[in-house]
Length: 235
Image (tube, rainbow, N blue to C red; front, side):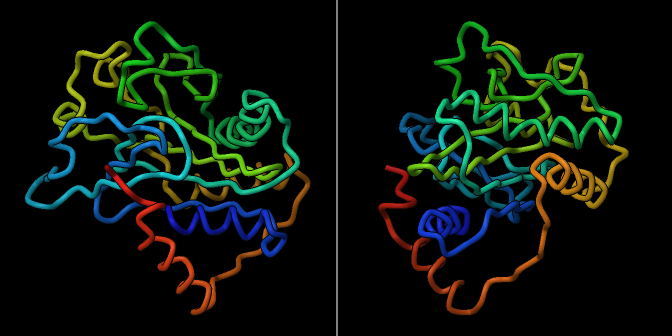
């Protein structure tokens, strides 16, 4: 999360080109949206199968996301519409295009009653999220805007553990992920998904992708940001 926040600030200052990242989480983690202040006290000490589940805060908005059996993407760029919803649609078009090439058709969701009170990002779907024809929410996304620059996070729920989801969120929320059909993506490898989405981004945005690792000094800046309580406070 600190790396994504750092990349956004570097891009805003003209020091970093637009960036697209894909990554997983180790150990499992539960991330809270930047403005999500109310959450169960037991989330601070969650464990699963003898291992801790980290609780972290995202720089982007939205609600809690369980990072297990999923693939996270982060896009940092500028030039999108001032309208938040239009920007979501502009960014998500490459996701729709990429997943379609893998045989999965996605459409934007529609928020249902109870969304405001649901702490679980995947407990409901909004117009910022992407769902299958069966109603399964495959991708939940959230944004952070800094001037004309944007960071959009998204979690692609590939092989969720229903038992773990129920332990954390329960099953009483509307559009419970435990009652929906499993995702039609379990046969796909992470590598094939990343490749399809990168190719879709190239085609959608007319860009060239170049892999670029961070220097030791840049990693030091990221770690300093991660240690800043103003960035990651969970109070």
